[in-house]
Length: 323
Image (tube, rainbow, N blue to C red):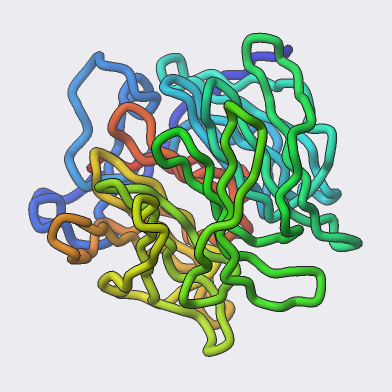
């Protein structure tokens, strides 16, 4: 295992007025310890971004998941379809290489549940996968799990009450899917749930206030602002307030109950858009724009910070947001 350390990249000071107003494009210079999530030094301004240690192996069309202490970036496209697994520890600013995923693929989904990283679905362009593989950090080893009932790529996944939900995507014929399937890590079994009202791929998913939210993506009517919420207790969906910006290949994560939807692409253009959703009030607001426009990347939340990793525009970028 090789440990690598990089310096944080400065991206300009956030003007006081911009930071106070929360205007898009507000950036800041952050000491390495702060960008790495450590509790030393002056804290970065609220509603601000910094660039942290870049990915040792750049990756587009990748997925990300996080334990309480570690960001994992898995799979993607690095000139070839990749099974690479890279781990970043914010507390130290260190990256390390882990055991490679058995099935190389891109446009997969990833979550962390029950002490393991789960890599779900994806494609190698020759076929779309139902494959599910689980990584055990304690053993630095992978194992094959029960496959999804539906093979698909460009799906999204999230964990709610210990259950993994895989939502949307497209099949090998390019059909947009509204499929929702639930995986129980305790029993290694999948079950079908009520499908989304809007079939789509290249969407994002996040959890807040006891519900699973499916955000944006691409459907039969083009790129979407659509947000739909799934209630597992009722096994039913409801429409939520739409995002402010239509987009696909975005990424999302929940930080202290607020869902953040980052970047993506619209009409072939990479975006820096960053929007926040409050599930309690069913409202969206604009936040500081990403330093680097991205699509097809991974996002996670660790210790109250939002991390955006990899992507098509700058596959090595690790962008860190302080709410």
